[in-house]
Length: 115
Image (tube, rainbow, N blue to C red; front, side):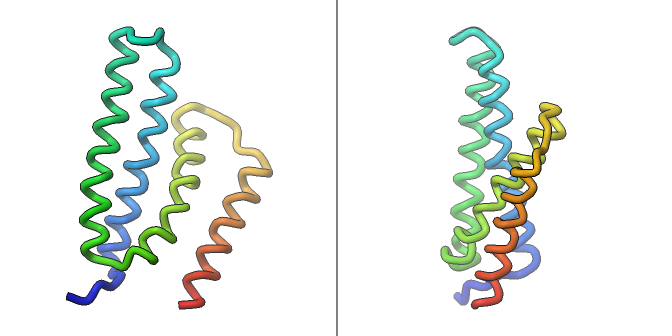
């Protein structure tokens, strides 16, 4: 079976990366509570659940597309993390954050065009 990147495979991969990045939400929420308190344990459980779902999705992605392409796009997790921090935790986006995202997207475009 030939592995190739289709629109739906790419969309599924982006969803998987968004889910993976959401583990940071649970871990940050856990940090708000006392160690081993019920809410701490619930949030750590959320991290484990999200990472388990992502692990299954990652295996499905690797069945559909080459590892080199899938792993190259994994850097978009930093973009998802920045978006989550802004929209969920009301954190500021700095000029350095924007420059970093531009460098990441530029690198992805460069590597994509090289193929």
